[in-house]
Length: 222
Ligand SMILES: C[S@@+](CC[C@H](N)C(=O)[O-])C[C@H]1O[C@@H](n2cnc3c(N)ncnc32)[C@H](O)[C@@H]1O
Image 1 (cartoon, rainbow, N blue to C red):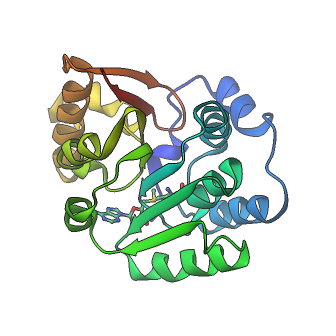
Image 2 (image 1 turned 180 degrees about the vertical axis):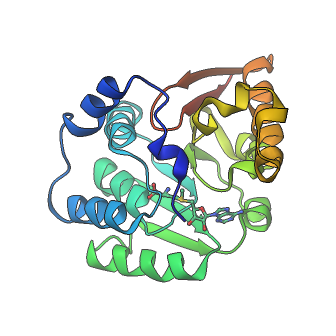
């Protein structure tokens, strides 16, 4: 599960260390969960993305949130705690080991009323959802971002924000494909396709941010 790209900074190491280690820490059970995830090598959002997500959600105040990629339930719990009981989170994962851990997390943090965990492949589950959602956080298999993008945009409220994590593959996406190991070429092609679709779409406004392995923020133009 370890995300090797998280350990390949896309910004200057001093800047990364500051953003990761000096911004306001979490407290209580969320902090314990963050530490456990890092110790176990579970690829949860890095701390600079945690801080950004808290900031963004406090401004946007979404009521209905969809997450694709629950893992142990860290980012879903962070969103639930940041937004409080006025918000409801639906989160999707297909990996039974993670699903069991996420269920325990939501019970321990007493968030089972606020978070629905949908078990299965997002490729199937997204089609069944009707939304609309005010905020969608996509943090799942990167090769599928280009496939899930139309579903996310269908489910996104006008004025809503789609945030997508891990989009840069440590910058290797922009090297010649021959320099990319064969096992990574499918992700290379599909993430480049995704970035092209997002940045060139005439009816989307987007911004790419160097947080973690890169974050995209996307809204539909009204
Ligand atoms: C990077 S982790 C999510 C981390 C989590 N958002 C956090 O920061 O706490 C990615 C998760 O997406 C799940 N996943 C990947 N592709 C998926 C798919 N097609 N459908 C459902 N879940 C998927 C994996 O099982 C994994 O648990």
